[in-house]
Figure 1 (cartoon, rainbow, N blue to C red):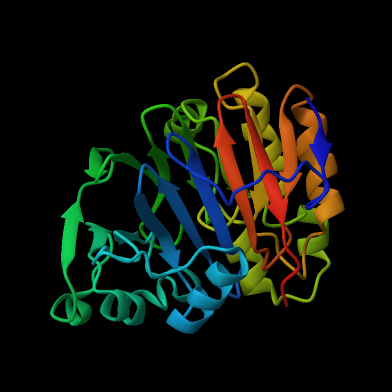
Figure 2: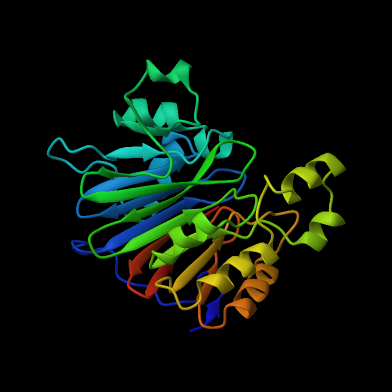
Length: 287
């Protein structure tokens, strides 16, 4: 196994028939907006919507993914926000209304204002549910807003998504251990946070048990996952002020030498093909 900076691993051909495969299109990761499209067996799920409809369309088009699927099929089958903070939830209403797709909300997201404007389907944390042929599992993780980590699975492959996590938990470890690949935050370097530009109150929020994972915490989590089904970790949601891709990679990869570790810098836009015990990424420069 090994570790790589974003864009240095093999680039798969994602233009052909995707039947039987699980693909993820990272449209943004970081405080400027988070969004990830997961696609398999003709079903598309948008995990988080921290972007507007125009940004969403432009970034998907840049990755060769048209929103118009023709034959009256929805461009996106569902939106699944992890929590209600603006960088994950800010574009939900506009995208749902523009694409006429349902939004799946866990009980911790209180959005009475938007419920009358588009279809909302409630679900409970800790339970599995299906969107078409895809199975979604949502586990509660500590954060300063009710937050879930997700496992999205086709019949053969599974992707984990865990950002905005205050600290690792047994439930999170178990969720990711049942995935082939995972996007996990490595938000900050504790040393850079301590001596960085943030005011003390914000430092305490980010570094506290209900803030974000540090490089060291993500390394601890990765070490526990060595030997599990999980073969690939993509590090995301990196702080521009309190971390660097190199620090995140070095810290996490050294703790999990048998794991394939890559990093997605702030604002990354890329395509991932999820496979059993390995995943390949296609990098795309995007301003």
